[in-house]
Amino acid sequence: MEYLGYFAAILIGVSLGLIGSGGSILTVPVLVYLMVVNPVNATAYSLFIVGLTSLIGSIFYYKKGLINFPAAIVFSIPALIAVFLTRYFILPAIPNELFNFGDFIVTKRIFIMLLFAILMFGAAISMIKKNSFDEEIHEQKFNFPVIFIEGAFVGILTGLVGAGGGFLIIPALVILAKIPMKTAVGTSLIIIAVKSLIGFLGDIGANTEMDWSILIGFSVFAILGIFIGSYLSKFVSSKKLKPAFGWFVLVMSLYIMVKEIAN
Image (cartoon, rainbow, N blue to C red):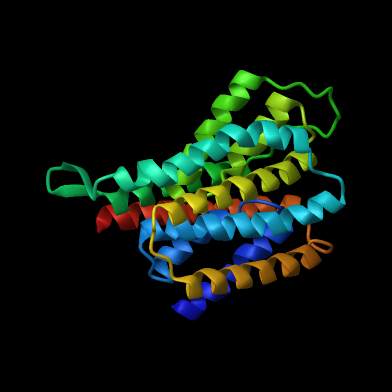
């Protein structure tokens, strides 16, 4: 199963290289179900892996001039604060048993995995449906209050489940900062990279137990997958691939819901 997990890490990297986002949403399920990592630790590992792979992925967009750094800074500040505080204070404070419905006890593990499955479901829907965003360059205008709230919300969500939240960040950049779609994807990658790695520092500060062999090994295979995916992107249309990948993520989200509730 561990070897299968490392193979899945390559596929996660390939998907990131091919479609620019979305692949990292599978990191936590792979760590939990294939690498047999505790969900709380898996969210910490995911922050490092997602942060590192997004940073590598953002390089390709930077070379094409598709990163808006002012927008990244405006969005990142509340997200950085929220994700660090969530990992350092909020997550450790969540009790192992939250509440129960009759004989069914909602544990910390079940809560995290169900929340993650809901996030996966939302990400899947955003990949399946055709976006109506255009590529026109508009006058950049920041809706600061809404961007602050959105950034803080994404930061808390990232802190809880260890996912990047690109499907929330990209629409926010397009709608609230008037950024073209391709630039929004590149900008979201740098935002995800920075806030995820800062969130991981919160785990280091909270003395979360780390298996560095799994963490580094998984990251290496995921980065290898990014380079493979970036090469394949020259021959494969990301617009056609993204909905198909979205359906796969949708099925995975439903599987996680059923599995965690059934157990």
